[in-house]
Length: 164
Image (cartoon, rainbow, N blue to C red; front, side):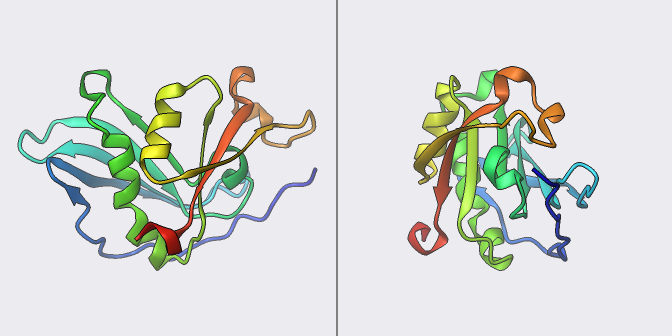
């Protein structure tokens, strides 16, 4: 399996308001593509409480159509333990849809480890539909970036034409 071409994008200079009730996505940084690792450009956000400004977690939005959509997905998130059970991950995913539309990224792919039931639920609550479970082949050129227990993924997709 050969390496895939990573494409570069022009990041949005101004982002839309990314707020849902007490949840706000605050841009942490814009990360350029890493062609050596096959990583697409990425917007990285903190999930912030509007009132307290406390950071509740993070979400990355990879604008790419490389191998990432297959094993990493376009979106990766984490919610700090004390803030779980408020659907911040699924709500954050939905807040990213206008950015996906701007970049003409359709569908959006999300993946998670097979045993991560909380992520399964968050992804489904975001409106994604389960597509398949895949395992990285032994000759996968980016396998070194994944721990052995994270090499089988459940794949989901959100189609923008169905999401709004």
